[in-house]
Image (tube, rainbow, N blue to C red):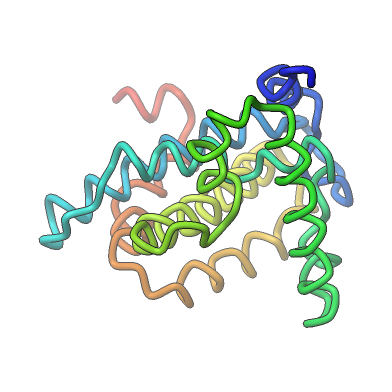
Length: 196
């Protein structure tokens, strides 16, 4: 067996996101994973400090780092395709499962139990709340991408921005709502405006 698990997941930097959209600035899967991890940390902190939660921040951030790792095999399937129908969603889940198993097969058996819950959504029920925050952070990352593209004059992302805002509101996450109200407006500012 070749131990190529880490070499494979490091290929996230080659996977481009937003394939159906005209991007003024391309975004890699690796960038997205980092942003989602940072946002997950913020949401955990907001929940723990302002809403009396007891999120396991370290675990949540780790889940965020690995949340789209299977896309090194599948690529970034655009949302309109991935969620086109219940059948499509179910088929894509099976593809993700196969991709996760494929990645895990490139680890020594002794390490597989550590990484399995990170690659397989829902594999560990005890981190359900943290997984929901990762989902919210994933949506926030997409929303920030839309804002940055619009800020650069690309109206291609306007509809995606509106639908992503609706998706975040539908999550009913007080942490995500707090972030949207208190931190999101700064992403529309110029660097000079941010520093004033």
